[in-house]
Length: 109
Image 1 (cartoon, rainbow, N blue to C red):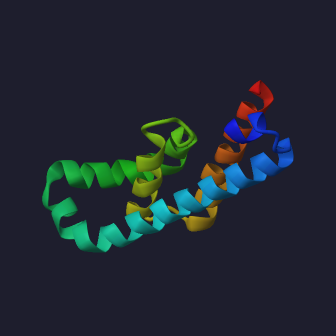
Image 2 (cartoon, one colour):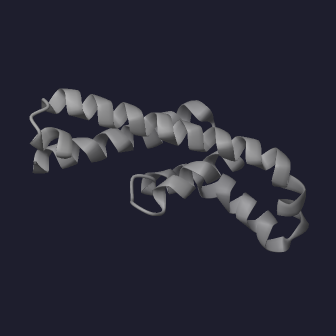
């Protein structure tokens, strides 16, 4: 929004905001992917950890619909990597929602 108010064109601001945020969620995904290897024994040692992992697989793609929201969005993209959601589907769902969020914000300004 600050870029638009300072005179940047809408398509240019949309491109930079969306691509930067998409790269950030891809980084979160791979951090989660790497965390799985380091934490899997601890994750499956508890009943809640096993249940969380199961729910992550069952509702993971639906949960990504909440990923553009503040506060819970970034942790959801990290969890997507932990539960090993398909990377292409992850980028298509979460990335397109991030683009849509910035497009909606651009319409407001």
